[in-house]
Amino acid sequence: MTTSPDEAGSTSAQFVDAPTRTVTAAGAQFVYRDLGADCGAGVPLVALTHLGANLDSWDPEVIDPLAAERRVILIGYRGVGSSTGTVRDRFEDMAADTIAVIRTLGLSQVDLFGLSMGGMVAQAIIEQAPDLVDRIVLAGSGPQGGPGLTRMTGVMVRAILRGAVTFTNPTTLLFFTRTRNGKQAAGAYQARLKRRCTGRDNPVAAGVLRAQLRAVNRWGRQQPASPADAGGLALILHGDSDRMVPLGNADALLARFPDAQVRIFPDSGHGVVFQNRQAVTDTIDRFLRR
Image 1: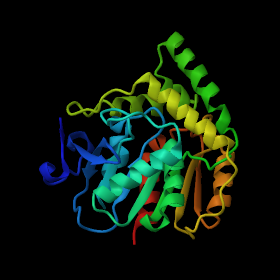
Image 2: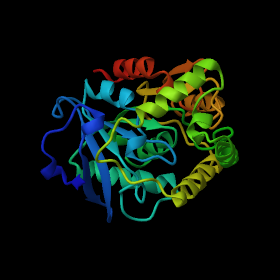
Image 3: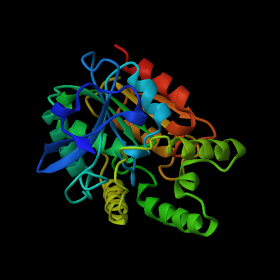
Image 4: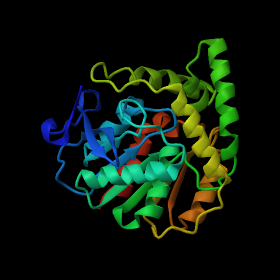
């Protein structure tokens, strides 16, 4: 069940029971969840999720600690999950949609937390509406023309096929290392994703994955963008064993955000945020704290 912002009432501080709301913007209805103990305080954090994900793909043990200190808004993409419209295959279009949603929600300034593909959308948001964004967190993401991004489709297809043969969720193969630590983290992560039992987002259709992979491929073929006017207000998080977005993208992002803070996590893959959730949320909290 979805509700409008006016109907939703007070927000919830817990991911598992936060109501799913809808907002009409840019000719479509977008689903979102609004969390936080005090939604009137500070700059809201807008979180954009990874490729092939819906609102339920967020880890509750990442979102809840962040929402304990600030308002956190999880925004879905057009045509994904319960959001209406045709799924986008360009990050510039996803960014325009997100900007429209943010402004429709009455927000004049936000922080951004972009996870993987969400970080690419976040960079496009900065290009289109630099005055809207104060601080940006990019986790497991890459810039335009980033190394290895055009190979992501092949990496994903091989993982999906291997997952089908071995009865393994592809995100276990794509997000985590194959060490003992990585395997344990993968199992715990999959269990946490099942905690929300009611009010879940609609499943992600196969066409969404194809469109978003086209967007990544386009992004990887673009010329690198000029350094952003973000000063030191950028935080880059990456796993040292990321197969989907290779580690070299962290250095490439530094060319885009020269004064950014960077933290590389050992024995961590593309699911760096989920595997190191306490360290990650502590790092983000310090970075965002005014």
